[in-house]
Every structure is written in C-alpha cells, then in structure tokens.
Length: 333
Image 1 (spheres, rainbow, N blue to C red):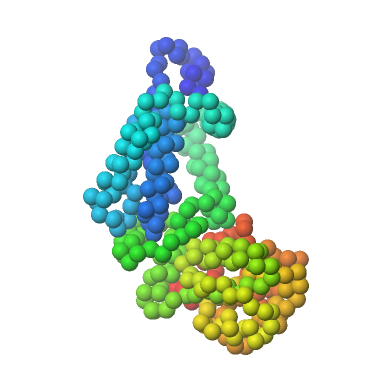
Image 2 (image 1 turned 180 degrees about the vertical axis):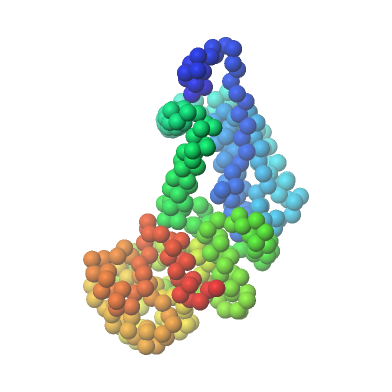
C-alpha cells in the first residue's frame, strides 16, 4: 500500500524511502491464569510479524502477572528469538511467505480495507478532524465491540481463556489476583474465574457441576466434552459425566455429590418429554441445584424453561453472559 499512498499524495517513490516497521507483541489476548500458553501466543505473533516484513521485533515477557521468575521469563523470551533465527532460519530468507496464496490474499484484503479507512478519514477532513469529531473513536468502538462479542460467544478462540482452560497453580492464582486488583487487565473470562476463585477462598466452598449423559454415547460424550469445557471457562469444577437412565430414581445418583449445577447432555429424540418430571424431582430433592441443558433451544424451549431448565448452552451462545448468570445464581459474590 506504500506506493499507492505516495502516489495519492503526489510524492515520488524515489524521494521517500519505505518506513521502518517496528513490531511489539500484543497483550490483548495474554492469559494471566495460563501463562505458559502465552509462549505459544508470543511465538505465533513473532512469526506473523516476520512474515509480514517487520524490521524490528520486540517480544515481552510471557508471564504478565509475574508468577514465574524474571530470570526464567527473560530466558524463555530470548530463546524464542534464537529459535526463529538459528533453527528456523527466518533471518536468512528475503520473503518467507512468498508464493503463499493464502497470505497474499490476506495481505491484499488488509490493504484494501486499510485504504478504504484512509479514504474515509481523509474525506472527513484528515486525522485530526476525524479524531476531534469522534469519528476515530466510533470506528474503534465498533471494532472493539465486534471483537468482544466474538470472544464472549467463543467464535474467536483464546486458548486457555475462553477454551481449554487448565487449573492454575496456587502461585499463579496469588499473583494473578494481585495483578488484576492493581491493573484491572484480566480478560473477561479470567475475571470470572478469578471471581469464583476468590469467592471459594473466602467461603471454603467449591462450586461443582455434574453431567447427566443419555442417548447415543458418541453424541452424548461429545456434548459432555463441550459442556465441561464451557463450565471450566467460568471457573466451575465439573465431575465426570455419568450415563443414567431417564427415570426419577436416577436423580439421587446425579445429586449424590450435591452439585450446584446439573447439565443434561441428552441426545435421544424423545428425551425432552421427560424434562418436567426430572426437573421436578431434582427440585424436590435439592432445591438449590440449577438445571441447564447442553443443546440449542428447541421449538418448545419456553415450556422447558417453565418446567425447570434454567438456560441452554450451545455453540455460538453468549458464554460469558451464561457463566456470569450461573455464578450469580450459585451465590458467587
């Protein structure tokens, strides 16, 4: 886009050298509770910057909360540079991405979108004018809201944050709680987990969910895996799924560990007809237990909600809102 920009302003390319590109890794997706996954993030961002033709690359420490020693964090970060240079040889290739249709197409799309934004800003009177009248802030807010929605619905996966979380160590928890209080930089899903961790530390209680499987084992196990990952992102412990018959006496089995949440991972065609009976029995045996269903809302979703289902969780739903609601309803303060 650089030659196109110079031509638009009537500047000869020979009189204006290409700008030097300085790249620094982003902190928008760094995890406080899963710092070692950040090593993969930093490495991926570094490779992307090199493929994009950066001239200077700065990598920050992989552990934003400081749970790892500074010596370790600095050594690992230096090693990322060394691996990409000495073992991958990316410093010895003029254009590592040359010939890649995917990257060339993505580059062309990026340039086209960037050029369109530049023209909008120039039409508004230039950058200073666009900033003073709120145009720039509006552009940023629209993009930020779209990104936030993609993260909350998990259409944009942040490994270790809104998907595939791992239990943090006591040291990570301590430093993350402190860093979050001081800077407020924890991402929304990690704020949920830290909130539940702090609540459990104060009360000594563990919030647990139990998975009730029924139907085709292949389907129900897949649904259970989704539900387990979903709830882990909100900080809930999840007991191993149990395959039970759809009868009232099975309710005692699913409630034997006194779970805060019971998740129906049912895949049979006629399973929904038994929801009112099962929910009524669970309510009778343990009133405080919340019942949810891992499935898209069916046509009779309204009737099922009245029968005792609290909510439906499924791919594409607002996972953050659902988990926040479950925390409120289970007494997490």
